[in-house]
Length: 513
Ligand code: ATR
Image 1: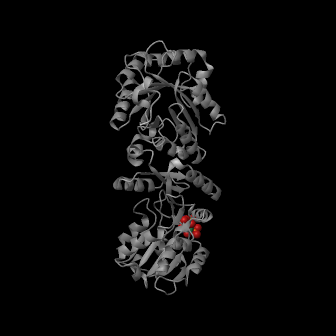
Image 2: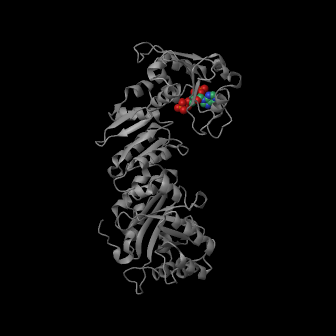
Image 3: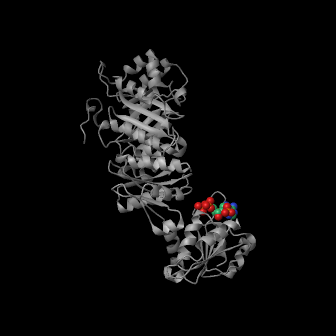
């Protein structure tokens, strides 16, 4: 454990590796706030932040709230011009903070906006009287958090603001929060926490800022904020305590944790974080896996991935890559002179970025292997015995490409059906006659969707997005073509859509036996 220069003022709260999971609670009544704090304690939080923006007049209740809180507390009365609800004057605000500090048990911290603290002598004098600092005459453990929030983006004068916080004798903790413009902003937040001139809370708001919250523990921030439930979040992008603990492996995160993610746009719907973090749990692997939204253009992909790769302490070790970046990944790894799996090259798209410990990159495609293994499993045949089977592929986009390449490579006759026939034809042309695993030539043809019912295939694979949430009542098979009796029992129908797990296509196929 590092030496902790602030132990004189607040015992263990500032020591390395002790990032506090802090549940933010809007206070509406004493009972409601205490009950929320009890739930926070039950779910494993370390601290609570009582947001008293709307609860400043019942002083007796404020004193009781802090005295009876099951967890140490931060008290915050956030003004409206910095994202809060408080619209009153400084005198009323100071009186509320004073009431919160009036019991024998004090808050661990008071949070006040830097700008208000600088601007108002009345507020500054009132707050300074309540918190611990070198000129304080009375004894108190309560520390002052000076905070700065920007809901539009990174403040241009971020460093000037930090200088002021550093220079303030009363300021024990610096808190900086801004809306992330991209995943790259998280790195600046990690950098601020890493400097450790004073205990620091640095976080980015919004979907792009999730990493700054989850990885705050990796970088030894003082604390990170979480919500009790999705509706009670006090800032955009704040995860719930449950998501932080269970989904994002909060208890397992430390300075050495390796970071992975799913890169896509949009990516919020992806179940990959649930799969991979559960896998890390099961194998006790020191990793965490995050959603990584990156806008579609190659320049965004390149700049973001490069910045994450070059931030050494982040230990970014790889990503799953989904729509619309599968081709960007190939281009990027080629440019960085990494290695590319031969079949990914042939498919023209990759979905997995591996970052080796020496920093070298590898791109591969797991889509085709997953599809081959799933279908072979269902047919109870090895890959070699796909030769001679007829496989209908619905769709001619990126996902279809990997599946066409895979089944053609193992000698199946592949028939591509697509809404836009030309695209089906172009894809068929590209893979028809390509060499197969068995040393022959691949057979790939295009056909009209209306002809699907005549196709007599043993395998049907949906590679379109039709049937995906929220349009769950759609099927990629036109009503007039849904004649599954041609296949009957033994026919394998495989949907690459997994949300919902059972699509309309699968329901109808099942009903037809
Ligand atoms: P992915 O990488 O997931 O394959 P894509 O490259 O955009 O995404 O391809 C989407 C596929 O779904 C295409 O084959 C598309 O058909 P078109 O080529 O005619 O656009 C197909 N698709 C999407 N929406 C569809 C719809 N409503 N009906 C039929 N096909 C659809």
